[in-house]
Length: 146
Length: 313
Image 1: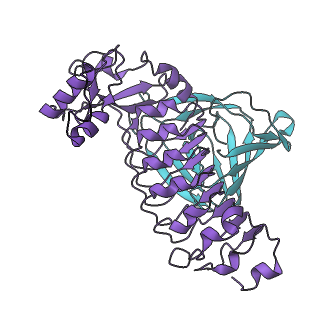
Image 2: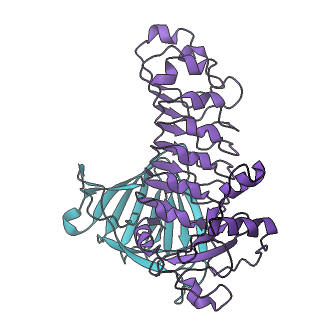
Image 3: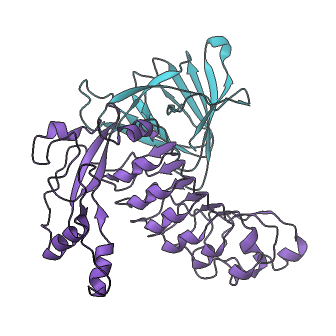
């Protein structure tokens, strides 16, 4: 019972366009974007984006927050690895949220980061559905956010 | 709510009155025998009259499956709500709750419970008596500890604890074999080995009780005052597999870390009967910290491996 990633279009291999559906209280881990461009648009509800600095080489301390903002319906955001890392969350306990994400080039692995220590962990991302069809669950590993 | 509701729409199954400014819901609801879903979020409910009087006897109490009261002003879970024996899904997110009543266990059919975004400070062990509970959301509260009994929620698939005041988790959390998701971020979980030095030496009564239990000294209720018979029945077994000991009130609290292969170190609270008791693979609690910090060879390592897949960042 977490947010779902639903692939809409794979742009002939040049990009991934997907819709993320966030239940109340759902949030992503802190993650990078594997050298790709990432655009996000809020279609419904609100999402809070918290930007983080990349952790130092030792990764031995609380990660530093750069900024945070709440994105409203129809607002857009952009991020790539040179800008930093982020966590995206639906902080509402009453409303769901829906966002549209465009990644170019497409990627299916990224790193998630432990906010307390900066330690990173590579994860493979999976889709809840593709082109409207439910994807059969293969692995039980936690998948990364958008 | 309009007075003629049940006469005009006797077959009503789903009613959504969210965002209407309602401060009360009255008897108009009671005779809707088919109503299984009631959505009343973002209103002004929370005071007296929020739920209709006579709810427990009404057909509604047997038909209701889904109730969403999130975004209201409830400071406590209304007792009438606990009569909804067929309720599968309850949301009280974003209210003003300071606690969860032990009688929550009356909601025997509950599968989904959302209590995120309140001011809850503690979880009653009775919450663990909900046999069908699959999703439990307690994020964004002020919870300081999780009762070990929560490990009895055998059906639990998803547990949301992020943004609370937890410093450790009970060791028993590793027993939730069906858990698929666990969120813990935003808690002040201890990251370094913590030695609990406040070990209060056992009282004479405790020492005598321990001896009676471990040496199997026979006794009958006629031999002892009732208070001591009761005391002896409260012995807890030391979880150290090499120790067959018991303890009553005096125990060592020891935080050990379960290391999820470098991804995450979860501090888990162990209760042991004496400072000499410890995990088979770590030295006694007074020695160097580096050995004691890693519990990866403990009998919990199998459970830890499972939990590794479950932790959400």
